[in-house]
Image: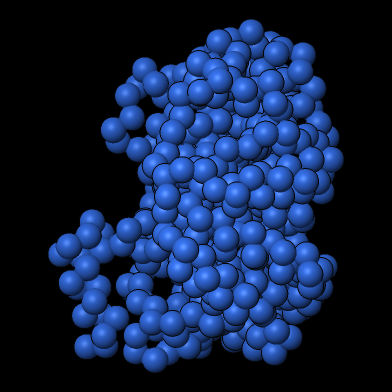
Length: 426
């Protein structure tokens, strides 16, 4: 038995499902996950020595690729000064200044340790600020494993056919309204009925946990208008899109500013991180100045902030977003050639992309669920056997990094074409 197989057997006896996050399991695609020994640039190498071109990029953070020299050296230098202090550091101020300077809507920001903490804190803050209880979210949008938001969620919950988790009290779930994405009529009707009781609308401005689809023109603008009219807050979950699609995330691209924004992934440089920020008058409701309590022992950890700040500086230095767009265009052109005439749909924005196994347009969760999951499963396995690692679910987004080369793209296109022929997607 290969070492990955042996490790997975041991892991299943010690860790639920053998993984520490359901998205890492291969339950949706069959087989079992490989165990990584090393990551460099655009490649992963498993414990058996097999090398893969990586399009998961640790689910988004590795925007410069794995083990970038500047990031690794910065982490090492920071660690020599101490790993954690439990008191403020200059790094926290620098990160706050950096975020405020890049994200259009943020005036004040607080660091946390994960995207889940960020969205959870946004919801609590929105309820405390508005003194209302109801939250509006959208089917297929995943905002971490927060009780209020793990209702018709995406990501791993969707992959395993369980968008509603056990352990969430019905009375809490009943405070969440779940609407179809890209359906402004449904949002208008919900606000007409309950607008004065709605604390906030939360969404991924570019949903990336049911594959990847984009907001139709005018949708985000209508959410902004309705929230303003009824006194609700608009929350963008940019844990994935923040600093990845553009320096200012999706809100920079689409020109719509939320009241609060949840961040993570890229700003940690691969280490655990999260943040949330927004209008100063709302953020001032947080303890110790305001009545909404939020805290975290490791929030603003110096290693995470050092890695994140270094990564952002490197991106700016090399004009990383322009480079990612160029790589994304090359990949898109190659994939579109592969799927021409086939019942498939390809979406890309910046360095994020998804190949749906459906001929129909995909604008929301219902559309995404029309995909042929059996065909995707076969496609994934063929790609994996030939050294191309894609997310192990039809309902996840793939990522590019600045480390991906034209040779990587050309090899990937060749493998994709072969995989599509093998599974008979024609």
